Length: 293
Image (cartoon, rainbow, N blue to C red; front, top):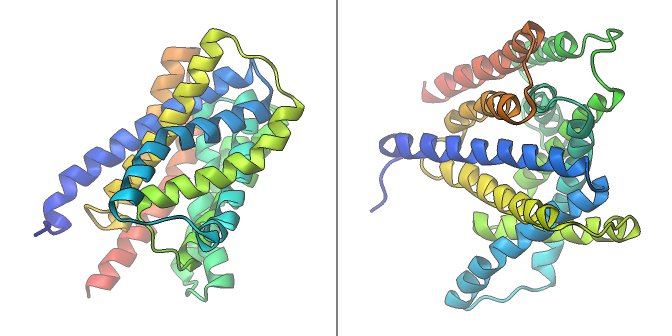
C-alpha cells in the first residue's frame, strides 16, 4: 500500500530540491555552450541527449508491459513537444546574453499566464485573487527589467516569450487525454523537441570539441534528471504544495551563477522575485485552504 501524500512530503520536497538544482545546473551548462556553439545546436543537444538518456528506461518499461508506440502516441505529444521546443529556444536565447537568475525570475511569470490561458481555453474560473496576483507578478517583472535602464540585453524579453510558450505546454498537458507514465511523457515530448530542432541544428552545425561534446551530453542528462525529479515529486505529495518549492530554483541558480560566473545579484532582482513568487505562493495557499473547507 502506498503512503499518503502527507506522509511522503519530505520525500517529495527532497525530490523537488534535487530536480530544481539539476535544472539550474542545466541552465549553467546551456549558457556556457551558447557562448561556444550556435544556439540551435545547443537546443538540439538538450533534446537529443535528453532522449538518449531516457530511451533505455522507456524501452525496458514498454517491453515489461508489452507496449508498443503507435501513431496515436506520437500525435499526443506533437503539440506539447512543439511548445516545449519553442520555450527552450526562447529561454536559451535569453540566458545566452543575460544572468540566469534574472532570466528565471522573469520566466516565473509563467504560472500567472497559465491562469489566463486555462480560463480562456479550459474554462477554469479566473477569480479576483488571481487577477490581483497577475498584477503584482507583472509589477515584479517590471521591477526586475526596469524598462529604459539598459541593464539587460533586449534578449531578456525572450524570457517572457519562453514563459508564454511553456504556459501553452502546461495548458496542453492539462487538456490532453494522454495517460502514459511521466517517464513516457518526458520521452515523448523530448523526442518531438528533437525532431523540431534537428533541421535548425544541421543548418548551423559546428563541429564540437571534446569538452563541448561532454557538456552537451551533460546538458541532456541534467534536463532528463531535473524534469523527472520534479515530476516524481508530485507523485509523493499534492502538486500545488510541492510546486511552491519550484521557486527555490532562483536560489539555486543564483548560487551556481556566483560560483561559475562570479555573478552578484542586485537588490532589484530580490524585490522583483519576491513580488512574482509571493503573488503565486499566496494565491496557491488560499486555494489549498479553500479546497479543504
